[in-house]
Amino acid sequence: MSSEPLLSVRGLRTHIRSPRGIVRAVDGVSFDVCGGEAFGVVGESGSGKSVMARSIMGLSTRLAGVSGEVVFKGRDLLRLSRKESRSIWGKEIAMVFQDPGRSLNPVVRVERQLTEGMREHLGVSRSEAHDRALRLLKEVGISDPERRLRNYPHEMSGGMRQRVMIAVALSCQPDLLIADEPTTALDVTIQRQILDLLRRVQRTHGTSMILISHDLAVVAGQTDRVGVMYAGRMAELGTTARVFETPRHRYTEALLKATPTLGHQRHARFNLIGGALPDPTEPPPGCRFAPRCHAATGECSEGALVGVPQTDEGHQVWCINPAGTPAVVLAEGESVAR
Image 1 (cartoon, rainbow, N blue to C red):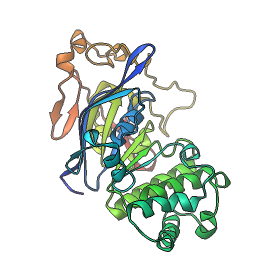
Image 2: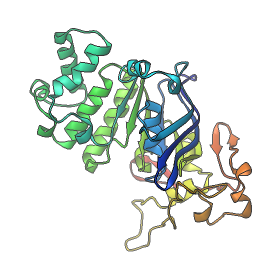
Image 3: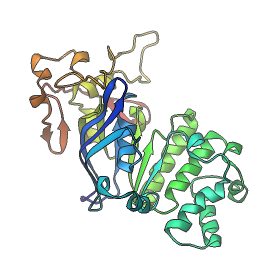
Image 4: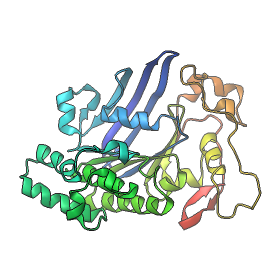
């Protein structure tokens, strides 16, 4: 893994116009992804994870205003023309969406969806693209790839469609792969297969990966570093082991306490996070988790204090009253805090 950032996001904001006002879906997010690194992004549904990923890819809605810097290999993606962006999509940055049933074209055979990017970006012949497509389907674990190339997406199971999506994303050997909730619609067994496949492919090809999920256990076993998002902002950022074993932000601590473990007593109550995400059109001042935080003080509502992260050996936390919690061990050796 390289120590130099492949992707550097600084002050990313995505504000969306709506009838109720401006939705601050992403509101000042900053992080780096190094070459060959697997970076995780976790948080509750509605925290802005998917909007952030689409903003990086330049796929935001027309009602969105996107600002900040997204520097990829020395180029600010937010300053590129549509034509320049199209030369990067698929070839240098690819995305695996959470719903392959909606992302794959239902009236186009799998072979065409696999090969058109290769022919466009790599300039290979039809026969060479066909051979590459066969190899990709084998690599992602699809049996009888020759027959599957002739299939339409609806003729495949959800797990197979997601494997096809991964193959499409890898077809031009991108430098960065963004996987947005890639296992949401799959059963537990297929989820593990898909996650193991992503990690194996990422390591084999030396591809950098951003793995987005609301499932902490998914990110714990698959990433090198992790960022915890809440209400459009980054709450905590550091190595996966350190963030999960010694969480510092009160939101990270609450998330981990709410994670079920194998040792959970039958009929015992789960630790829930009270309240709900704040209204993105009228977020509270200062720390946005403060209305739900049991340790909040008056200072937590002062934006100037909360907006500056505390940094300790690369571990950043946007909290002026940070926590310190011992760890417990989940299934498969995944360490998280109780």
